[in-house]
Image 1 (tube, rainbow, N blue to C red):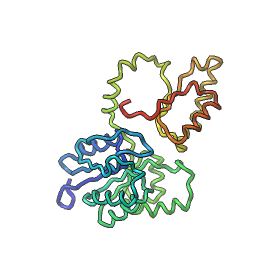
Image 2: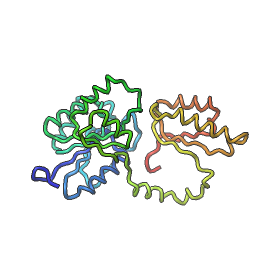
Image 3: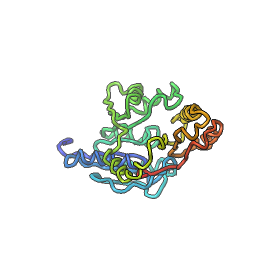
Image 4: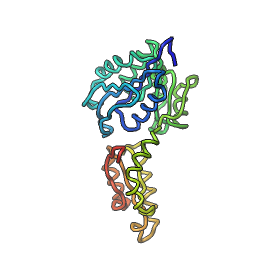
Length: 276
């Protein structure tokens, strides 16, 4: 791969790296080994949104953490922009996994594009995540104009990005990927213990943030119907529900479980790292 007669530098940036971000970065590093320099840019070590463990090295890439030990939300917009621009201005193509609505990312995308860089948006947003307003959607079309392409999660994300003005720009699926090799390796470590649990004794599992767009309220209503449909001995017969994660809706979820009479059937182990 050559870019204007030389090897290109590919930059990928996220607010914070989790295990699945590292999966994607290492896959890019392997794919482009010997053909391009891959720069993995992590803005901060932690955030108020995710309780991920601090990430380590990213094989096959050069990793840069811009604000070690700091939380993403507590870093000023201007500090973030300056650090992001200082690193990414050396790249030829930049893949942006930070939310496109962040002020520093809006400014960064325009400046990088003005310098002749190719800027690619990576997103899992879809139209029905929130109640959308037409005025805001029109504004988004302007905010996203610097991006030359997009990588999205699936069909609904594809349709939403097309709606936002990517009619003549490349849009590819495959954003929400993980390393199956890593998952199998971690699963094999606990395989013997897992086999001792019968299928009937295994619980339903929810993994995610406790936020409105996950529609947890509807899921709990469905689960309560399932439990109570099992009859008088339902709690002994029905599978339990394990809610892995945390978030601002936790008090509301506890209250709903109580109102639905399923509190004794739902387990909350909290936020768990990938290895768990």
